[in-house]
Image (tube, rainbow, N blue to C red; front, side):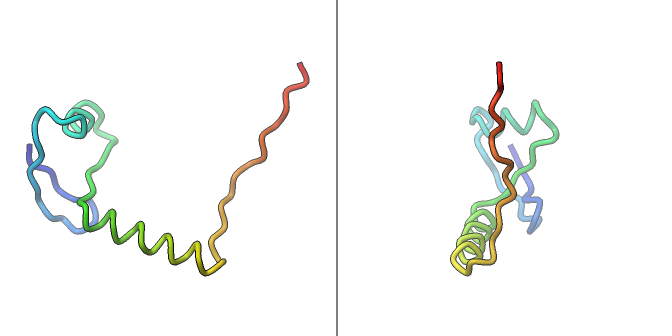
Length: 66
C-alpha cells in the first residue's frame, strides 16, 4: 500500500496486511506520518517539556458522589 506523509508529502510503501494499513483503509480520519516526522515531533516535544514552558491542560478527575 502506498501512503503519503501528511507533513512532508513523502510517499512510502507499507505492507497491505499490517495493522496500520488496515486502520488507514477502514477509517479515513486516520492519517499517516513518516518515521522522520514522528521522530522530529517527539524530539521537539521533549525539548519543550524540558524548558518548563510546556503546559498540559488536563482536567482533574471529578469524583462521583453516588
